[in-house]
Image (cartoon, rainbow over all chains, first blue to last red; front, side):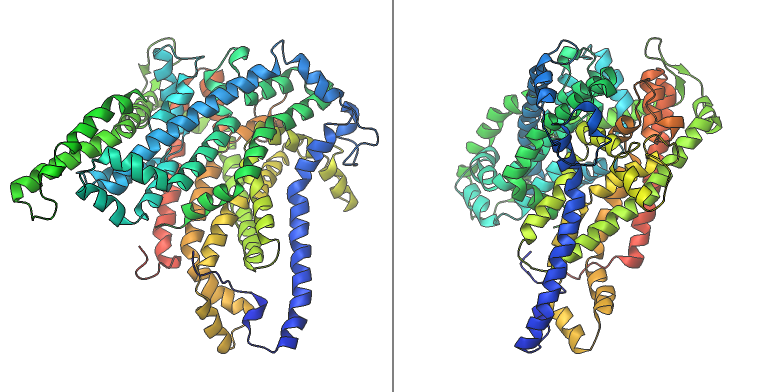
Length: 299
Length: 333
């Protein structure tokens, strides 16, 4: 990532200053116009949902105005009545519990696994690494039914265990992979010195490697939170009592029950459900984007 | 979590009372090396124990079980009954199954290239260092994070319905096909649009790849009088081909597995999960319907294995083709 330069930087040609200037100005203008046009397309749905949430239900789809002439807040105040007699906050707390539980599990289990792959030489390491990468490419749906049968036989349907257990068993190969990449790039001298001083693996893992891996841990934690928050299929299959529903399921229930009759409420609820993800994104976008970028560059 | 906690103290003791006794630099005798190797093995397996448990319990075991279910009639309540290949013959003879295969393949071959083209195009644009680059990069990436949510699927359904923005825009151009989400032939394109909208994730990976192309290559080519297009074709594309391969592989595999957005955009209040006239019935939607709505777990497992075979074939073809078009740099580890 050190070579910073790319193809079409206009100053690359070794022309005169005046020539540079002539070439740079229209190019720069075109660049900004292009970027803004893409931005408009990207942002349209988000702006639309914000504007729509302040419109009357019957105006939401039909009208092309992004923002209503006379905004109303009844779509939001209506949400306090809850969905099917369950308060919205219940869904939020359920989602929050699952998301935080997932984050803790992923950070602990994936970092332990990654440490073993990156720092311990044990028999069968390469085979296990290959298997782990293989699970990245495995369609989840092959596991869907047998996992459901397994948890059903263990009487765990309608509990959060099926949604959390895998997170504590390092099931997310992507994050293990991300952390392995990161740990391999740490200076070897640090843990070698610690070994010579008589530190065991657990000590090195805890006091040296984990603190140095903070960026990778944070990236994994945020992605885990967002994935858990957005997850729809897992809760759809495993949860069947509305008071255990997550925000995603609650929203789907809202759509099925009230649908077009309360379009405004549905749009407002959609936006509220997105807020935590958007907030995380604003706060941590650098970690997310850098984490994403390194995933594609095999180390 | 239980596993890690109980193993932790044992591991600490193990390494603590052993290491200092052996002189660190002294070249160890073979017996000692062996002992040390065994200790490393043990430490390795202890650290790996959550993953090993997860792999056996949640991946390998279920895969075997799923393969078995595929040859049985299983409705969750009675024990599975072996029926040989009946699930497969039923599947191949089922017009709805064949339709779902068609819908999915169409979605993959239209959606994935469009998404990657958008990602590469915008990455090339953003690769020019200009003011605001970081802002645009972040903004373009955002849809990849929220695109999988139920909220966005709901928004999508609204934007692509009759009289909404897309419908009105196409009317300006004289296209009168109505909203896409109510149309069996068009609804799949609203899902294509949704995946293309999320081009940010592959874009970020392309950008990282573009940054690694050495500038000298371009300078040399420019001295030789190569134009922009030639430089892109002969330098940029080969240099980023490993990243391109990675994106093609991951996006294709993910596209095959589309579920939530299709289920919600296509889902009506009437309980039909697959869109008007099954228009958005992607493969996993039908799998869900058969398995969880019709309680046909055996049949659904057979379907899942067909999906696995298809994805494995596509993966194999991609890996095979990579020799022809992916250039890995010498010495790149």
